[in-house]
Amino acid sequence: GAVVSQHPSWVICKSGTSVKIECRSLDFQATTMFWYRQFPKQSLMLMATSNEGSKATYEQGVEKDKFLINHASLTLSTLTVTSAHPEDSSFYICSARGDYLSYEQYFGPGTRLTVT
Amino acid sequence: EDQVTQSPEALRLQEGESSSLNCSYTVSGLRGLFWYRQDPGKGPEFLFTLYSAGEEKEKERLKATLTKKESFLHITAPKPEDSATYLCAVRTSGGYNKLIFGAGTRLAVHP
Figure (cartoon, rainbow over the protein chains, first blue to last red):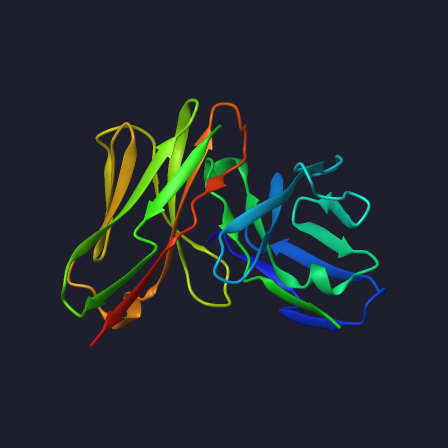
């Protein structure tokens, strides 16, 4: 139980284009989803928290107009990186929490974004 | 400011050589401490949640313990497949759902 998937697993895009990453909870309803980014050999940095049907809460320093988050249903959240630049290249990981899971977060497998 | 510090940064063990990883925290009201395992290029895998000092949880060769200021992840007779980065995270009373992660300990177990 508590399986989270992400799509795509890796993506290469050109500078200036937008990329959408999907995060799905496969066997539970995720009331809250989280988006992290991780640089090589570093820990996870929380970007934003989203609750189904409401606007995401972004962490300090994260540009909300650049990283658009939508949590339209209890099983799907999307992260869109708009006008991507090489410095946006990173490993993006989502996690999800359902009410019955207490406060554990279950993570997706991650998406490797490379902007050329 | 809430902080989570993990040590050592990296640990190399021989197969069968037991050891412990440390996670120390300074937070305003602990509402849960979480251990995760992360393999290269993958998302973290949930291992344990601890809520109160004195609590212990076990899973195969792993045992997690919690005191008022730190948590230990004990690895007994590790195998090469235990090689991974182990992450510690805390949930605080002021952070609602958010987890604050430590930098992790990179464990390598050699045959």
